[in-house]
Length: 420
View 1 (cartoon, one colour):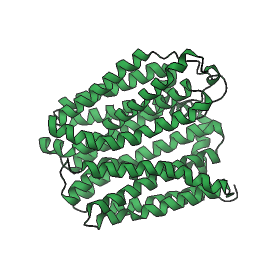
View 2 (cartoon, helix red, strand yellow):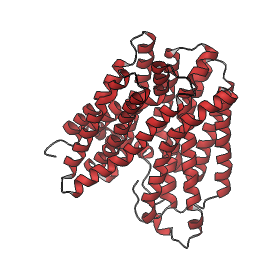
View 3 (cartoon, one colour):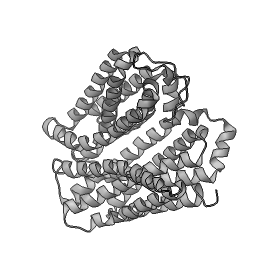
View 4 (cartoon, helix red, strand yellow):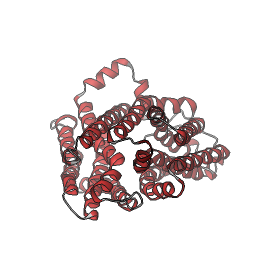
């Protein structure tokens, strides 16, 4: 997040907003946790839904595919919407709409109906990221914005850890349909509290637009410049390679553990939570490792590449998860892949800041995110086919292990090429 003068200059400790901005941040954290619940719970409810409807892996893969397509398309416009509507109304509309579509999941009776809801949910949930970033940029002064952004970013990891612990228990106790109802009600409660807080937004004139909004507003000639830029191609390729692994694990890790180790839905909760604990640690380690190298005098470009290749090498452990009879060894291997993913991603985004002027960063990030979502959607269909044909997870885990080194090579060859 970057800001320029103007918007933040109005935010002082004596400002009326000072007494409420931390409450606003708490609501941003809760909204992000709910967002993660809604996104991740379909993977944990897969056995219940399949048992009721008789849907196999191919149909489940199509549900994941359409969710990501909905998110990818909406990603282009979510930031623009938040910029136009403002944080208060934009966030309220986003959470209200996605909670409504989450609620409708409880009443679905057909595959077509579920596909429509997954598209709608993926699209409406895309509002959360630009709204959260804009909320921090709007309500926090520069001296507090980094801390606030760090807290907001941690919410997705918190949500990923809580979801596998809570959702299976809810589904077992109340049924999978009621699990959707409970999550939707949480969103509606959040909406009421958010509107009651009534944050008096300062001027947004000095706030850099969200990545998605910048991409929509990018003039046509600059679009072509971006698409022709090999540095953008390198970043987008790296995002496509590595984000596809993240989405593979989010939608299929519970199934993998249950299928491989004959676990029940309740038994898979701790392993999945453990995987995301390691992912959260990876987020922290990536920034710390790069910072240490740079402080020791290593050139920034060299430090970034060394860290990318380090995490890329760590991800090579992925196939080991398939060849152990010990559940927690497998959990550790999958967790190390996501640890590597988060450490890699932290530095991958930093390479954009290193390689591009500030005015282009948001648009480049948005293009990379779009590439990652589209690649993730394609992978969902591939997973379904591999499982239905009996080939299984091996090709996917081998590819996951190689993806990060290939992504690092793409960054080295295209985005941070020697001599630039």
